[in-house]
View 1 (tube, rainbow, N blue to C red):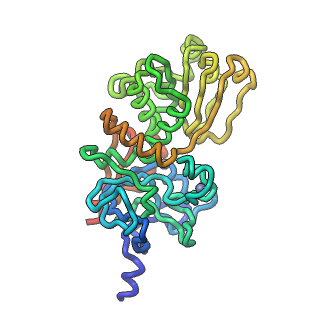
View 2 (view 1 turned 90 degrees about the horizontal axis):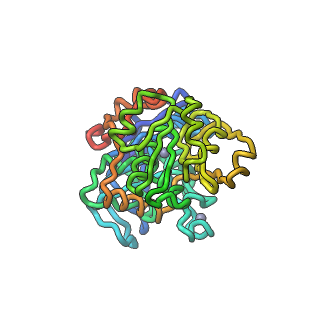
View 3 (view 1 turned 45 degrees about the vertical axis):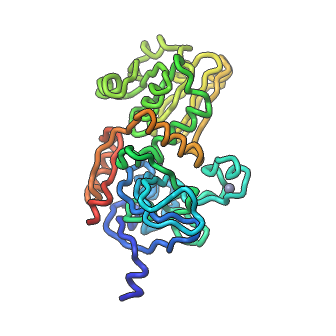
Length: 354
Ligand SMILES: [Zn+2]
Ligand SMILES: [Zn+2]
């Protein structure tokens, strides 16, 4: 019996096969090593990645699979060599839990682009074990991949910052989309898009939301503070915005044409893709005319993540969330697929596992 409990010190919910249906599961987390932080998970955000990997969309899922990479919790133990964290601190863990810490990318705070980066779930860690995500009661992680959440910032709302928040913040900073008075287009108004609107307004930008759904107009303008709302299939409205935007952040996960959006950029304008369309097709002229740039981005490095969390705390930027219990997760994932969430589900892990 002792051996059995040693092998399962962490309660979780896991998918067992490509049906993606999650159910209770337990497994063992490693003991805290000298550079590790252990945290009790209080909340975990629900990302579209959780759907993709529980359902084996990329054909690389390793079951049982415990998803979740928007983790917010409280430090319960720190390793002997850890500096900057103490028991009781509010902290977060995002989409990766390890990297080589020795390559050009790691040495430039671009750990997310390290060739040996280990994702928070369904990754192979340096000890050969498959990583398990935040739909679980605790996690042990090297301190470099753990982030301070300032006192007073609600933990439930901190969770979505660790993937949705950083995914849009990093390209906005890289492409200088933080110059007050300039204009930003945001394509898609889900978990990522609503954060891009919030960052845009905090940076002093004039924000236009592009959506396929008229039903989002009221909230985009009145709740999120967007300046303009455009139905992207309305060719007349799209035409009237040609050459008018400095920047576009494209968060759409579905397939859509690129030329109509690129034509909205001013000369030298930048469009960044952070969603996951199945392909990108465009006329070369859409880039050549106006010397426009199309770029991509994937989450952010450790320095950017801490900076983004601090920026959200300082500017009172809070994701809009719907808190659920873990036993609602299968319905929640189905609703996420149907885009029926405003704007991020967050699992109340602490109360779900009592
Ligand atoms: Zn994510
Ligand atoms: Zn590296």
